[in-house]
Each structure stands twice: as structure tokens, then as C-alpha cells.
Image (cartoon, rainbow, N blue to C red; front, side, top):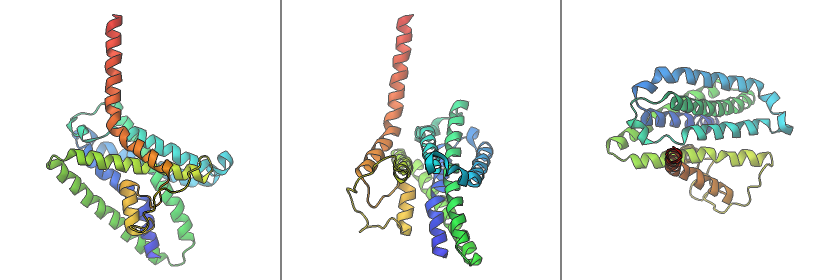
Length: 264
């Protein structure tokens, strides 16, 4: 019972703690501090509670696929708002208001997605248990593990920054985002909107996805023990976007400015 509660924390809340670790390191400046972030986090938690309360009604939308569609929308929103963040953000002493607003929207979407999923599953799990003390102990241990892991991970990221290994942080940050966005494959396949196909790899002999290590790797990189070809394609594309995206945007902006100058 305690183990199941801990795994619930690792599956749903550990990615949230990991996101905060990245944000603490990647957006470390005076204008995007805790005082600015706190109202956004409170808003995200309130949104999670609200979604938890209306989840039964939402599940009836779109012929019973309302929750899955909403989760897909939250994942796409969070990825679209956060993918451009990298270690170059550290150089910005003052982030533009528009950029900060986009980042906060991405954080809110991710908080609502993770916390609401945790509340829904935890509510069902809690109702099935008779020993409240063991569930409470599991919650304390799970929260402690998530907080401890986040602290250690933040320290590792900070050390990489000090060692001028920013490319490593950019890579694992892109892997984290890709691992999160690939969850849309699961949700869309659950409501028969896409066909996943047969797995092309079987990694369960090395690490079981349902194990504690599997949940940690899934939170860090989106580990999948039996990925399909569709999963691999989406993972690869979303991993490459944070690196290719800024160059494409810069190129388009340059061409736009040049065209404007030519018109003049």
C-alpha cells in the first residue's frame, strides 16, 4: 500500500518537481523570481482542483473522451510555451513581459495536467484503501522523495552550469520535454483517435517501466519499455525542435526584415 502510494507520487508529481529544478537553473534572474512565480503556481493549483471537481462531467464530453482531449491540449500548450527555454535564457537579466507570460502559461498548463491527474488517481486509490495511516505515510515518503530528488537534481544542473557544460543541460531539457509531450500518444490511442501499432523495441528486460527506476526514468526522459514507431517519431521530432526552432525563427525574422527593407 505504501509502495503504491509512493509510485503514484513518482509517476504524477516527480515530473513537476523536475520542471521546477530546470526553471530554477535556466531562468535564474531577478525579474523571474519566486515572488513572480508564486501567483502563477497558486493559479495552476486552483485550476487543478477545479478540473478535479468537474472531471466527471468533462469525461462525458466528446463521447467519453473529454478528459483525454483536455490532457492533450494541456501537454501541447505546455510544450509550445516551454520548448524555447535553454541555457541561453540565463544570459537574459530582464525577460520581456511577453516571454514571461508565455512561460507562465506553460507552467500553469503543466501544473494543471500533473496535479489534476494525481488528484483523480489518488482519489480513486484512496477510496479503495481502508488503512488511512499507511496512505498518509506513503504520501509523506513520496513527497520527501520528490523534494529530495529535486534538490539533488538542481544541484547537479547548477554544477553543470559552473563547469560550462550547458549543452548537456540543453540536451536533457529537450529530452524531458520530448518525454512529456509523447504522452499524447497514450491519451489519443486510449480514445481510438490514433493507431499506435506494434512495439519496435522491447526494453523491459533491462528496466521495467512499472518499477521505481522506470518511473524515475520516465519522469526524466519519458522512458518507454516498448515504444512504437509513432512514439519514436514524435519523440525524435519534439526533441529536435528546441534546437532547430530558434534558428528557424531567427531565419524567418531576418527574411521578414530584409523584405521590409527591400519594399522601402
